[in-house]
Length: 516
Image 1: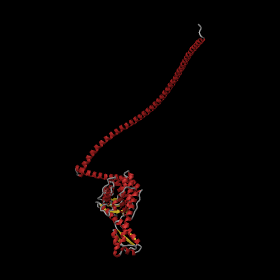
Image 2 (image 1 turned 60 degrees about the horizontal axis):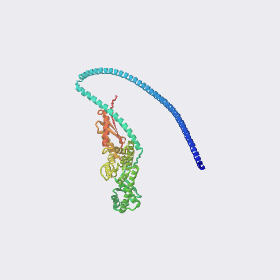
Image 3 (image 1 turned 120 degrees about the vertical axis):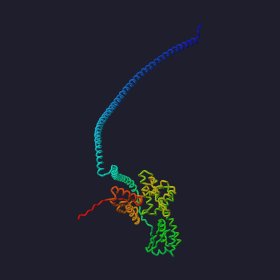
Image 4 (image 1 turned 90 degrees about the vertical axis):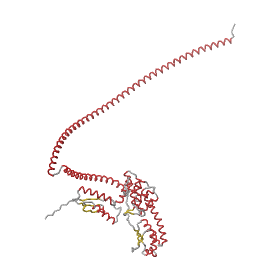
């Protein structure tokens, strides 16, 4: 049976496709094998490259390690050389010290040998001296007829006098040296403080003079039957003196504020020309208000100048009143401002509280503003006023103690006292009345002559020095030094004076003979 042509064609196509598929599979298998071979070759090449690179890295690491080892070996050798050098230097120093110790040991041995020799000589001399003393004692007892105990008392008395003499000389030298050093340091601090301050000086007075345009104005001031002058004196509290002085009237009073108000009022009345009791009262009232303003401005000016803040208004007014007070020719407000500056400057140099020193210095004479009205020392009055206005205890104490009554307990209080003394005692700062000056000179001479052995005393140099002549047969050289010190202490205790007073004790022996 014959197959159909289409079937044969299909079988042929299938056969061809099968053959093609077998060929394609064979080709794919061969391609895969070639790809595996290529990958294997590449892998092998990579492995070999990695091995070569690893070998190179290994060689580099070994080389670097060798170089580091060489560097470390060089460093270690260098450090070893340095250490060997240090050890050698240390050994040399030790050798030198050993040599020095050896020399010192030899010197010490030599000294010990000499000391032993001297000790033996000293012992021998002591024995000789003891024998000599015993011989002298026996000889003295034989010559003087004194027993051993009596001779001891005489000898001890002589030794005591000699020791006192030498002690007094030594104390005098130490005291002089201490004074020089203290004066040098104090002068340095004080000079620095003084350089920053200045002193104003006024003339102390209890009267004011009012010029008049003519003498006929005196009658108008007196008024009918003296009613004008009586009203004026009653309202102002001062005395109006009308005498023969041409074209002038004198106002007298111890309260400077009242006297200034009276002067202002009288000048205003004279300028206006209308003088009668009503006009006098009106003018005085107006002048009192002007005076209060001037007092306030003076107090505020002082507070501003010193840099003190937070003062009670009443304290400012009391400070302003000091503008019209003088003490021995020195304006009290200017003196207070100066003391404030001086105390602050010295406190700054000594590294203590500058604010307390400045404030206490400004307020230290506060009591003088009301000492005409309140009894007691002005330091105590100022202390009570400041305490009532809630000032600190340190400031109140400095005010109270600025005249050493009581003794200062703080450095700031001492500085205020010192600044007050500096301001008051510098040359030209104050003036004394003739009566007080004479009394001070007499007081100096009386104190000097109250000591035993004084022959005569003289106050010289305007009371800055007292020279004392002593009897040489009653006062020796050491006694003269003790006498000068005792006089200085008594002057400090009993006299009030500005500055320092020098005490000079003179002892001399004169032998006089006449040739005939």
